[in-house]
Length: 124
Image (cartoon, rainbow, N blue to C red; front, side, top):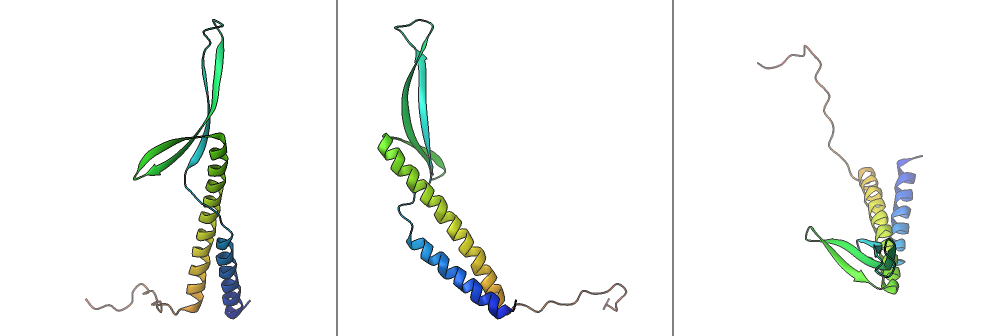
């Protein structure tokens, strides 16, 4: 494959990635936790009772973990947005690698010098 074919293939790939960005919906970072709490049941000694499920959205804000309680409907919507964010991150990472390959093929680089061989005449 020639460099010209590589360039056109990479440019097409970059255009595909740009179009796939348009398909994204809401995107947020974080994760959803589904919690169930077990407590001693006062009505039945020796038995436990499950409370929940409770949904929590955790994320980092300024280096600290922030937690927000959610309803079941919110948890479903937030989980979808988190999946979209992960898809966004994959697309952006792919765009970066594709862009780097494209730039390496289309821009001239520094001419590498030959290595000195041992015993070569040096100024000293």
